Amino acid sequence: MSDRFHPSRNKLTSIINSLIDNLVNNENLFIDAYITAADKPPTAGSLSVDDAKRELRGILVSPGIPWIFFDVISTLIKRLPPPLHKTIIDIVRLECKPGKEWLQPNSNGTWQIVWEIDVDSDPDEKNVALAWYTPPELQQAPIVPLEIIDYISGAISLLRNGLVLPSLSLLFIALEAALWDALMHKGISRDGEKITYKSVRWDFKVTGGKLLLSIDGSDRKLNELASVVGTYPATGNLSSRKLSTNNSKSVLRIDLDENLTEFFASNDEEERDTYPEKGLSEAVQRARKTEIMQTVPAQLDETIIKLRNNLIHLSVDNKLNPPIPMPDGGQLTEHAELRKELHIANSLVYLVVELINDIYSSPNP
View 1 (cartoon, helix red, strand yellow):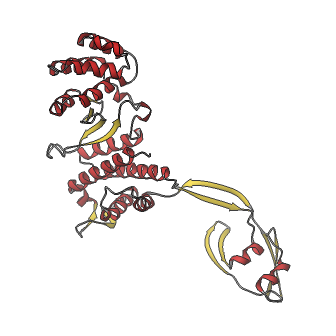
View 2 (cartoon, rainbow, N blue to C red):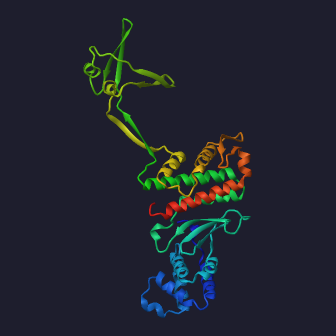
View 3 (cartoon, helix red, strand yellow):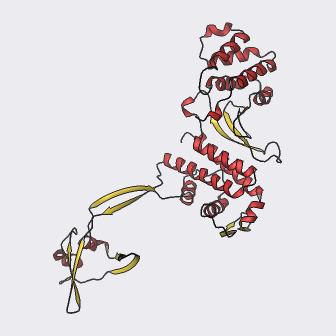
């Protein structure tokens, strides 16, 4: 996992000392939390606070993320009386290397990665957080995939610097990834399938103003066609349309009744490929049908889809085309409007982060 989640040993030691100082008359809870997290035998209950601190600091020397530290803090919080929760949470806040990003537990002991999004907001609204680790479920850490964490972190960093357009681009990429992850766990694939059938050779000859065809490689022979169309000799029609031209070759589409296809083509597969063809629009529609997007108001679906498409297929003429519909009935028509309306971007960040947490807090994914 990223080194940015690996606090220094000095920082952790300082936190442990501050914890003990603030656990007056509750030091035994720290010892119990350490014994539980370290999976020590019941006889370890004779440990003193100093013994527990000394052993824990020794363990923290080991390389890698100090998961036992996170386990101890989570266990401690769940055993402390609620009035002490905020004090402990503030003490154990661990700043990450990117600015305005830190790890901290919530009141139920789950660790979160937190970002400051709007310094001018009310205290309860200035931060957003993604679930990171619920001790002792180490195999599920991080709870939200690191790729999505990185994109959300980048989106918030750009937004804090007033770069609304690239910020929302990253936000919607993260949203699309999370939605398809949830859909795939429900058995809904985002992959399209392309089947290439074996080619069939048509040889033609013009005689007396009429086109004569001989077909080689089709599933059935032309002398059987009369029995299908019900006339003898067999008669019928098909329609063709030119689709494209590439140098000296053209591509035609031929429309004909399904029961005639086997006389003019082959059902033998030559190649079968899968590829990711479906984007955010398809993901949103399917997520609605499968009740994945319940935390996002349905009237925002069109706003999100059209805004994402405008940003991914960016125009440099300052135009949003098509315009972005807003829930109040208005619309945004220019990039400049979007840059000025920071509250729109902030609201979308809150909604997307809440949805991602909801997706990864459920049993699947």
